[in-house]
Each structure stands twice: as C-alpha cells, then as structure tokens.
Length: 115
View 1 (cartoon, rainbow, N blue to C red):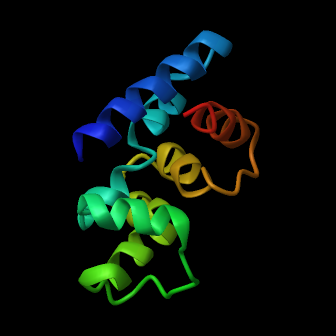
View 2: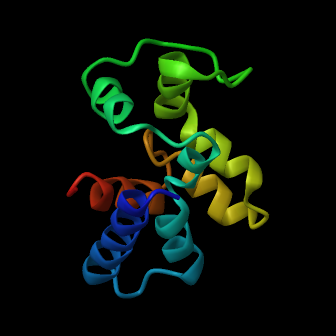
C-alpha cells in the first residue's frame, strides 16, 4: 500500500479503538485493511487528485491502466481487498466500508470519515 494509505489505515484503526475500545480484533484488522484494494493498482499523484474530484461509474473488471483504472480503484477497492482477505468477518466489513450495513461497518465508516 502507498505510504499515505498505510498512515490513513493506522489513523482509522486508532480512531476506531479510541471510540470503541471493546472492538473485536477482526474489526481492528478490517480498519487496517479497509483500503488495501488500492494496492492492486496504485494511484499516481495526479490520478489521486483527479479521482477525488470526479469518479464516474465504471465496472470493476477488467482492471485497466490510466485514469480509467484509477476510477476503477476508487470505486471498487473494497471489493478488490475483500477478495484477497481470508478471514470472512474481516472481508465482510472491508467490503461494506463505503456503504455500511452492519454495526461494525458503520463504526468503521465513521472512523474513516474523520480523515
């Protein structure tokens, strides 16, 4: 993962733990891995800025290069990460971190929104 994404993951995990010290270990692991799908195709600095400003709906597959691939990573990184995580509880929370449905998914989303 990009150094910014690693630092962000640590900040999210620390925020989650400060708010919910009783968080199960699998939730903390989900916080640390929630953006790991971005490592599949790292952003170039200009792409990171552009996809933050505009990100149209694009399919997850096949993963492409260029700005199109950057849009794919922006939209589908939770899915890319969840596919690679063997712990089903961690994968489920990572998958829903942008659109939380579970209690811990909502708590992770709230901690993620701080940054």
